[in-house]
Length: 560
Image (cartoon, rainbow, N blue to C red):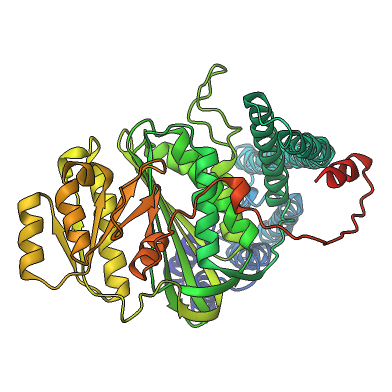
């Protein structure tokens, strides 16, 4: 629109020059063009106001062109172009103004004909004038019809969008209400099952409990998804300890993972502040969704969790990175993940399960917390999801520290050939490197017995971190080193027993930094993942008052 107005202004200046019209008009036209482009480039005013300014400028050019006695026939062409240009503004009022201006200009031209007799008004000239007028009127009629049709379509589209929006809102209300209604009976089922397990801990009750927990999570996911869509997601910030968060993640992984062949490696940066402030419940949900997706789409290999903090003026950016060796995603899949429900397998007989809102919930929660999500994936090779979430620092003390008297330097003794999936070797090595660096220690790597003995003879080392397979293969040698004062830390299955040697400490899988640091500090009871019943606290003599408007919840509370 502004380009056509500019061309019209240039044409007017040229015609003024060749026709020797008023000398001052080209200056006004040129200044007008500059003003129009300034409004356009600077984005001054709203689009409708700018259209009004463009229209006023074009109307001035048309009127100036039409008040000269040489413009009888070409004024109709100018009006037609004027009308076509401003038809795209879809405003009938502008078309009416153009037609009114055309009538005014033609009236002036007829006055010139009457006064000057410049044209011989024979039948041919009369038909030419009538033809031009009819052309402009026809153009006006069709332009008016086009604008009306366009406005009607826009109105229909607005009604359709409002209808769809209302339907979506009704569906969100329905999902929110039904999730509230289903939560209570599902919680009762889970609670009653837990009570029954005290008397008879059968596999059937465990299956019922697990199914109830899974259904409760799905109901909670539906509610979270609707709250995100409606912009009603709220944060509940509180102080929390990073170690407790990671311990919960590791414990929950056992409930999620039914494939015992998958390994979990958690890389917690020791310099991460001990206590942060944020929504700990939302963080648990983020970990649950990321781990569920990783387990769901990983058949062999394992999962690597990297947690670290990046200092900022407001506190830290808590960075959470979950990497798996699963099926991966294409670029098209990654672009669709954040836009709504996404299913990697949409068949009705799909084996992966889930309702397809896990990653959209992750996006919504992280954005609500002021962070961002980045996904890097290669089809057939795995996926890495990285979250960065702003958190306030309550206690800046590093969450993992080794006593100065405990010792120094670590040897990481792992045989690379034992890994069927090479990425697991890299995950373990990265965890060890980051742990040693965060603790201010040196890490040395050994891949065979001879190399291990060489390092022990040449270096001052206190700790040897190894795996179950390596320990079983070199048990006598490692037990001997433990007797000499070296601290041998063995990452193994929970039911594995290293023997009676005091310097050998079991690190039950999944392996991560906290139990390693405990072992380095001299704590031999690092098996923090014991039986659930043994981990429960007991409060003898405590009486509690439970108030609830749902009778079934009171029954469960009484049983507990």
